[in-house]
Length: 106
Image (cartoon, rainbow, N blue to C red; front, side):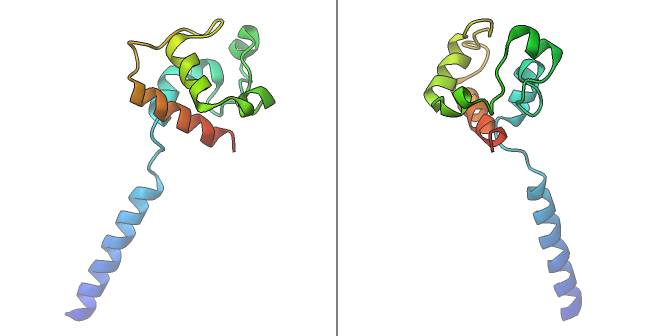
C-alpha cells in the first residue's frame, strides 16, 4: 500500500514537472502571432521579408543596447516601417513581448 502511494506521488510529481518544462515564456504566443513574420521566430531577422524591410536582428548591437522602454515605445507607437500596436495589444502584452525578446537575445 505504501509503495503504491509512493509510486503515485512520483508519477504526479513527474507529470507536474513535465508540464512546466514545456511552458512558454509570457509573450511568446503574442510574439509568434504579431512579430515573428518580420523579425523571425528566433529574432535574427534573416528572412527575405526582414532583409527587404531592413529589420535588425535582436542580437544586433543597437538592439542589445536598446532599453525595455525603447522596445515598448517602438511596439506601441510604431517605428519606421513597423506598425503601431497601440489598441491592438495591451500594455501588459507589450511588456510580455519585450521580456520574450530579451530571451531571444541570449
